[in-house]
Structure formats: C-alpha cells, structure tokens
Length: 102
Image (cartoon, rainbow, N blue to C red; front, top):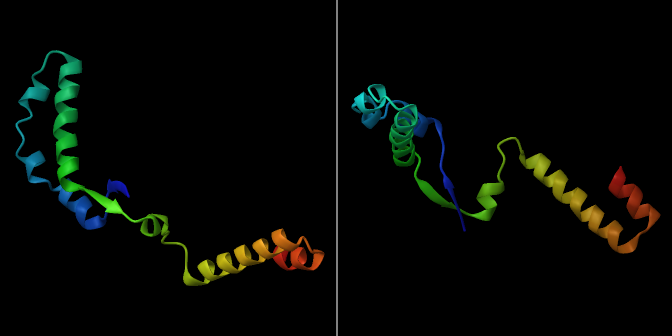
C-alpha cells in the first residue's frame, strides 16, 4: 500500500499557523555566517513542521485514483467506453469498432 502525505485546507491552516514555526528561535538561521549551514537549519525547521502537519497515511489504490473532477456520469461513460473497446478488441468487428469509436 502506498504511503503519501494527506493534504487538505484544514491541515494547510495548521501548517500555516503551526505553533512550532511561530515559536521557533530563528537566530540559528539569521545569525549564521555560512549560507549553506543557514539553509540546512531553515530546511530542518520547515521539514519538521511539514512532517508534523501532514502525516504520512496509507492510501488504498482505489482512493488514490479518485479525481474530484470525475463525476459519476464520466465514470459511467468511461466504463462503457472501456467495455466497448474490449468487445471490439476481442471480435475486431467493424460494427463493434463503430460503436466503440462513436
């Protein structure tokens, strides 16, 4: 099962208003003389906040394929088109091909 971060508006608000970011002592970033070390410190702080806000969750294969723009009508049409394609592919009939392509 695939693991991925779960995103949403509520979780985004939690991340934006994350108390650890607000209460973080940023002096290790701002007062660092080496830009690479400052960036590593900054990245560590943000990555920690991100991972605590957007925890990894297990996604089922079916759920991960869901698209918000796929309405029930589009899903039904897609299944019909798939069924017609399989029938045409099996028979190679001109009639089945016409039904599939129309």
